[in-house]
Length: 325
Image (cartoon, rainbow, N blue to C red; front, side):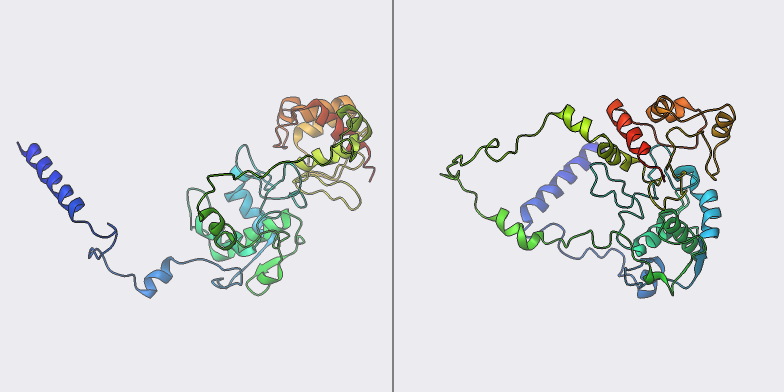
């Protein structure tokens, strides 16, 4: 009987509330709790603004950040911030945002350094948030800047020089003007009659010489150019061209036809063993590696899963062959 009584009471209350509602149900005062005091808000508010507001005193070096990243972050993001499995890549990707497959990282995509600092301080490391000291956060941010080639290896980040660091994509975002430009347009009464304007053909693609050339011819004449575009997937870790340097991965100038592991770079044990066995990066070996790096060389430190299209592999090899250093 008690269950039926409770059900009747609840139903009556609901019907009574619904019948008597004359304003939104969330309006009014419910006398629950009290407004937070300013010092209570300040204790929880750790946000850092793009103009530096909220930054605490402290500093951290690239060197310290490198060690700390290896201890606290590399399990998910890789030793060089290159990403592990489905965990995101944090380094590289500069100048790839206009590519068909952009590499969005801290260095290439995030507009403000304050966002990096704030995010790490609030939510990292994963599963143990807000355990990092202020100087440790400065060190990790400095290391991520270095990993994207934005500062040198002796850089020390502090509140004093924080605003001197300009992120590459700071001008890459637009102001959200939808309330002014779009809402009025889409809030108007819809057109219900005679809404479609007459369509008249004035010229054809053949008249304007816009008919595309056959795909085979385009690939045949622009294989290197196609390879350069596909290589955008590799830019997060590898550099090519004049001034290329070893970063997350080794620079790849002159790799086609060269013996493996010849650069001054810390290769994996497996790569060094293959080099001792006489591995030469000819077209066939490069194609096999690019198709499935981990399958071709188990234990390789390269986290990239490989290129799926044979045409892309062929194009990348052609592009690399053009990079002599």
